[in-house]
Length: 519
Image: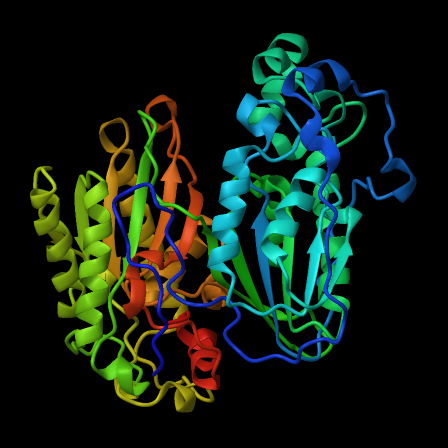
């Protein structure tokens, strides 16, 4: 097993770097000439000038594309070989900093902070090889793409379909201006964006359709095995959601931070749309936690470190193998990362490899100056029970999983009970932080429940040993019912440093993804 060197976690503001490369398999380099983006002259424009310049006139340069269509998204196109796509949001822009609605307007540009964020992501991706760059035509994405792409050899394509959501008359407004001028419409934009209408247009439904058009170009190129896509917050959300076949009502449920990276793997599926796995989502240059807003709750899902049997490629299930040496390092790194967070409650799988990491989190909470929360075991957080199949190689089981002691439907229902309990725990007392140490299959099941998905979708999410997955619940103190949850990141691994095991793409891993989540 190969280990990948990466920057260690530090407590200073220094950005975190990835635990493993994003392009994890070799690919055939393209002979294209090096691509050099032209830096926009927009950096000469002052923020004050921007405020006075932009007014929606009822049309813009994108009208001629005829892509503002309120229609169901197109299905993903069939593919003939595996593809990996890395999505990156642009760095902070001048209008981000001002709290101004950007939409598909093209006056804002990167701030110094935004340039620094893009440079950090460039370092994060510097060892990764991409066949092609696809990027939005807007300046802020154009600048970010230039910084990240650097001196890479390869071709680049500007896709107008990757521009940010068209927000028409809202574009250029400060948030307080939007509330004052548009009242009920602005409230609908905040609370029910999927049905939001402005200037007789449906921005979010149009965006979902436009994202599906972008996928036709990104996945439809047979020569591209690994692609880098640099775009925007809302359109990256739409790309992720349409890849997962989620409707526009899921807008704002998958967080996309400035300069953060999300990675999707696609596998051929005959003449049907490809199968998909979210390798990681919203891996930001900094800590995944940030400062929680008062009245919010969150669930921190920590995947157990590698067990002894897992090192041999065996299907463990509920077999109580201890942590390997690497697994203990992964668990301690995760516990150390959580020292920056006040954890109010800790839940654990009953297996010893999970309880050991959960207790480390509790012990280090005390060392960090917080009260030490007790560790509560829950059978619902246990791994899937494979019965007589336990101890066999995962690649063998993929062909016939009929001997499992726990069916996928029963397992999914158990994950649903765990989700409901954790969701309620995060809402207690006006919002709490709940840490959970469990297994990859359970984390995938909880994510599926959060998004309203069923047993057939367990293979959609990959998590590595010691990784962090974060679900947030904003404004729970003011809500009459439980918040559905915002997935803020999945499979965050930067804290693991040089001991992180890279995400592989061998047959055994994909076999496991198909039957028990990805682990």
